[in-house]
Amino acid sequence: MKPNKELIGASTRLLILGALAREATYGYALINAINDEADGLFVWQEGTVYPILHKLEKEGLVRTQWQQADTGRRRKYYYITAEGRDKLADGAKQWDGFHSIIRSMVEEPNG
Amino acid sequence: MDKETLNPDVEKKAKELCREISVAHELDEEIQEELLGHVEDKLIGYLDGKIPVTIDDAFLLAKNHFGDTALIKSLFQDVHVAEVSLSLGRRLGAAAIITMCCTFLSTLGTGFAWLLFTYLHAQAMTVDEIQALTTSGSLLNASDVAIDPLLALVLYMSWNVVVCLVPLALFVRWKKAMKAGVHPWFYRWRASSMWVMVLALVGLKVLIPYVPSALPFADTLMSLKYITLIAQGLVLVQCASWIWWCDNAPRTFKSILVSGSAWTLFFATITVLPHWHFRFGSVSALEPFAIGGQFSHADVYWALSSFTIVWQGWNLVMLFVSIVPFGLTTVIAYWLSSYVLNRIFAGRVNKTPSTQ
Image 1 (tube, rainbow over the protein chains, first blue to last red):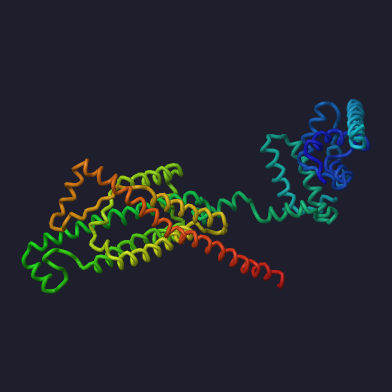
Image 2 (cartoon, one colour):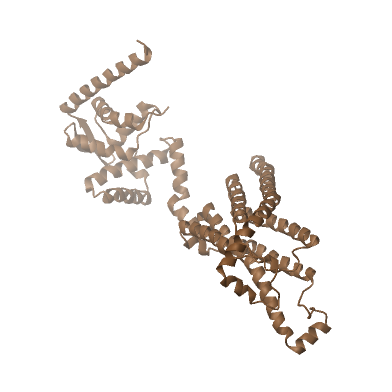
């Protein structure tokens, strides 16, 4: 079963913020982490995640910092901000609310 | 994920890819660097075998290795442009136009060619040397300028056979031309123009006079049987020609069914339509310009026409009833045989790869 695009689109920002709340990381690792977590439920088109990350940065929900790895490669790390954490909490609350309603409707369709 | 694991060529290609994406969207160097890092990580992951190739990845790889589908499509269209793009409607339109033109040649040409022949013959008979020559040679009866009915029948039917085979010859020619990449006229015409032309030709048939009674063999039973036999054979050939013309790879039952049905409808239409039917029984070969007199008298024209349309209508219905089943039989036979052959050969084709 593949979720529809609207569902993925609506959850993308929250998923990114959630992943960054766990651990600051760079784009490639972030995408891999979320794809692993999804376990085949969906697979992000990797190139499309970067514009969203940049938008979150512009909105002040994440901040970035270039870091140099031991190999010499520079990587742009993303950190969630306090505002980002608030948004994540709000969003998660809304998803929980919707989830509860849907579950109750599905489990008790005549109720 | 060491940077050193990417060789310079691969790194260069990765950079080009990122620049392509970034430049296309007018992105700055920092974004390019970020995207480059992603692409490099991905490549290293694949090369190291750390990232398993998923089904989607495999499809992407196969697709990319195969090439740009839009480009491949356009290349195919360059090679098979005619075969690929000619619609069933255009094929039918072209077939209808050419068949209609040949019908004119058949109906109009026969009568007038006969009258012209008899006129020229009559004029020739006024020359003593020719009269003596033809009479002595028994080629023609110079006294009443009547040609042997059998000879007339053979000439008439030969003409009709030739005319009926013209569409088939053209279909063969067009198919060859199309395979060679040539665009015959029906490519350049607009679809609407083609169908207007078909309707115009069908309408024109009503206005074009038909002069069968000028021919000397119309009343003999043997001639009638012979004509019917050949006519039905020609109808069979014509129907099969249409189907063959419209039946192109990949074969579909739709094209076979539609072309067969279109031919039946076309034939029914042109057969049932009335036309100005003249009986020039009184026109002798020695007075060929009497036909001109008939044309100049509109009242006679209309009177004869209205009378003969009713008479001819019955004949045409009978002709239609007797001939159309041949067309339908052809369609059904072709359809069934196609189905059976497809089943047999498709089965063989499918078996071959699995046994290798």
